[in-house]
Length: 157
Ligand code: FES
Image 1 (cartoon, helix red, strand yellow):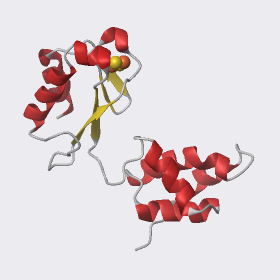
Image 2 (spheres, protein in one colour; image 1 turned 90 degrees about the vertical axis):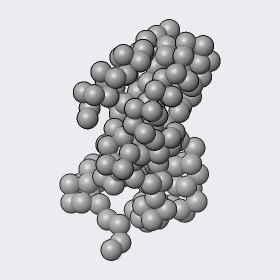
Image 3 (cartoon, rainbow, N blue to C red; image 1 turned 120 degrees about the vertical axis):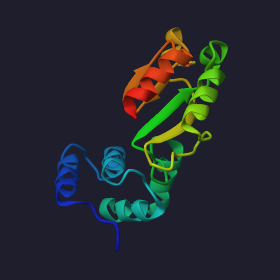
Image 4 (cartoon, rainbow, N blue to C red; image 1 turned 180 degrees about the horizontal axis):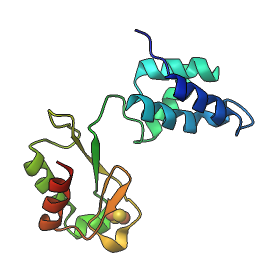
């Protein structure tokens, strides 16, 4: 079956368009809407959005590939992003990554078989003073230790 927004998402799409002077200018909020609606932004979803926004699909693909926010395949319910930039590296980011990998039994860029967790390494999350840092969905977790990671992940299981 072809990709299509739900009725609620169609209404939200129409509402988004009222805030922008052109359909192209609304691309990012529409991509966020698509990610919320479908959980990812696949090639098929990009084609659907290109029709809605009356834009070449290549234009959409260029934007999608620029941001890590729009995965091409479905991710877990909780997306764990561990910062791997300098301050976090110096403060133990690799220990954080290794511990999460071991605890969830997955590698970076993988999702647990129950579709609950996806692990990613990302660039600076903008909280360098409280390194090491990870973000799970919209929540930041700072000054991480192995004990803190255990508590956080256990609370989400
Ligand atoms: S280096 Fe990790 S938050 Fe900036």
